[in-house]
Length: 128
Image (cartoon, rainbow, N blue to C red; front, side):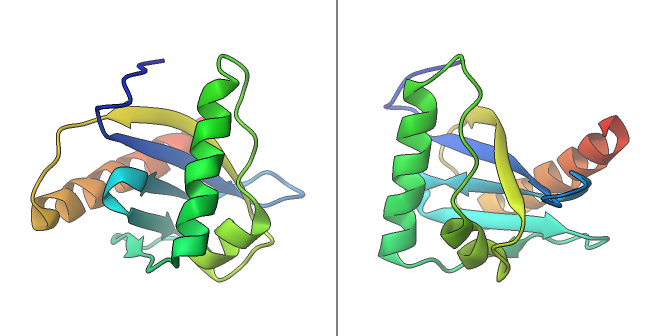
């Protein structure tokens, strides 16, 4: 895994049904920019989440603990973080990628996140 704490990373995760493990969606958090989005169902636009400082602190901890434990699979997000992102904490959210990127103006970032999540959702559903 790429590990340079000075480079922002987008942490991408699957959203799965907790019992069947069917892919319900994908999401991304970019802690350095306090940016979070999820794409679920048949939607074509990712939904941005407005998260509290407490939730962002939890995301920061989730990322740090996951990075520290590599190469082992990072632990799933806590139900409280998932609930803040989706409004439903009864979904499993497991990280599958950390993607370094160059910071972009917000409108371009949103456009790229939408494109990335749509493609990732298509691929993850196909692979499941």
